[in-house]
Image (cartoon, rainbow, N blue to C red; front, side, top):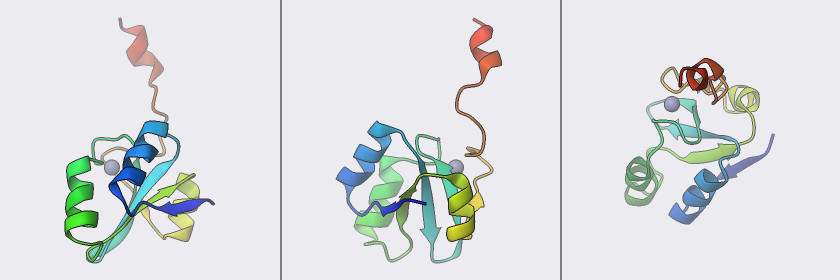
Length: 97
Ligand SMILES: [Zn+2]
């Protein structure tokens, strides 16, 4: 699995622009969690607070290329809010228009 630490705001911004992969957020207080790269859990504000103001002392952001890899390598759990294992495009929604 390819893993890249997102240690600068620029790296974070680029990753979201490319929109390929997933984000693992580690936390000193609880197990790491895998999120969708552009899911509702990921925000520039949170990144700035944790990585820049907190100087990564409470946790880090990693860009990974697979959910399965993150689950095994980071011993992460999948986020229950943005559900990274589900595909982004839900066909039934686009058919409702
Ligand atoms: Zn999430």
